[in-house]
Image 1 (spheres, rainbow over the protein chains, first blue to last red):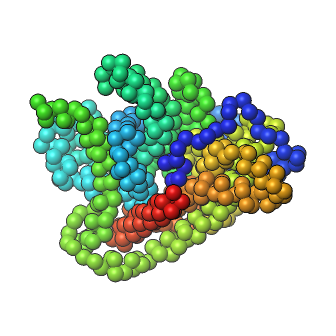
Image 2 (cartoon, one colour):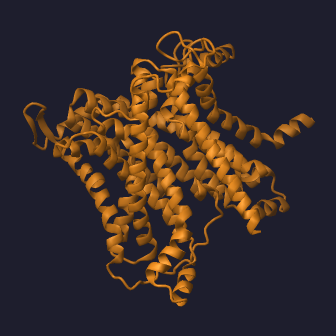
Image 3 (cartoon, one colour):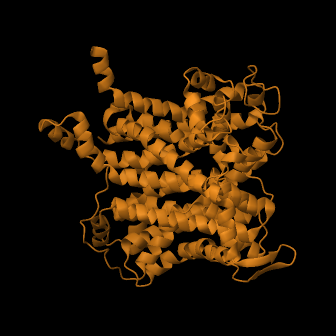
Length: 307
Length: 266
């Protein structure tokens, strides 16, 4: 937590290389255990998974690599709705997180005054209650006939969302809206924290300067604040979109069989149906799709020094 | 007109506070429903006030066993990930070595990968090796995904360190070991602590990777997941509320102590 509230670090001047130390082997010894761990338990499994996806066979007789690429085609043609749904839900949740999170991050950075630390604690504190328990709480909040659903119904909001296909009848639970609401809730702090970090670095004198030059508050925001907060926007959207795409908890707890995401399919193929090649192929496609989208997005947004 | 102006001026504050309410509403519900006495097996609808669950938090079989298992795993995973991650962070900031780009991407990729992909691929590795799923496979997995976050947290701190402090220590005839223990480590400590806290929170609350690689072992999140299918005991809310209160208190106490120290120094 300390890293979040700290002032921007006094980085050494750009261009200075790390100093050379006497021990030539020291860096390799320092790196070895951790990197070995990541190689064996992160990189190697990805390779194993790739090989599993082109195997055929059965649980009883064992599997063999037969380069059966048709598994990919079959998996995609059977489960493309779940893929599309995952991307749609995750994208909606990301946009909602940005819309909801930006004002709060802005509030903490510029308007909170002496309440800043308290609000910061309140943003982080929910993390300490298991997120599954908190997600289950949404079952109570969105319960059929409960106050929230009742209010939405009275305001005819449910008619609009039902027309859009986000809800069904007078229910919110077990609909896409509930799943997106849960996803938004679960990943909101991952949007707020990077936004706050980049907003906090903005020199307040820039706002004064814009004001002195007769810029209206909205112009100041559009021309000064928002562009300078772009690194936070980019990393916040990535930190929200990536985990949301692979999530299956919200779809399982708050959704129905019509809201299944690709994570649900991978989970049930792996843990219940035990069709390992199909599950591995699906997981591999998801990984490739995410890496592709993320690379494209980082290129487009022009902030390649994120990592 | 004045009201409209006031609203206009405070629009950001109002929107921000609404978001904060959205973030905290589930915690309020969890707390309130820890005092519920539900009729059926599920604790989703309010029935009547009761403190039964608070008097007997371990009253549900398996709940406290899963909690203690989660704590153990989180502690060991924190220790392992912090040790390995701190070493990597120091190597990255302080030394020149070959294949830096490859090393960086190996550290970055686990954070840019949906958990379900890591979980599934790790399971294929364990199945191929014929490993017995349980405590050790969970621990291995947790150290793996916490590692990168520790590296990022420690790296940020070490990068902001003034290297001249260490040079000064050496000029004053401190050996490399003495310099490290008495100068480098104390300055890097907040970064290491932040990394360790993050690792603990990530490991303790992890569900997806654990769900794939736990076999029949039940951690606390897995207990909650199982009860969401079979019936949610009120005790889950009690544990959730207690965790929230303890965490907020710890943060507040550390802030007060920190402020007092700052004032004493000033």
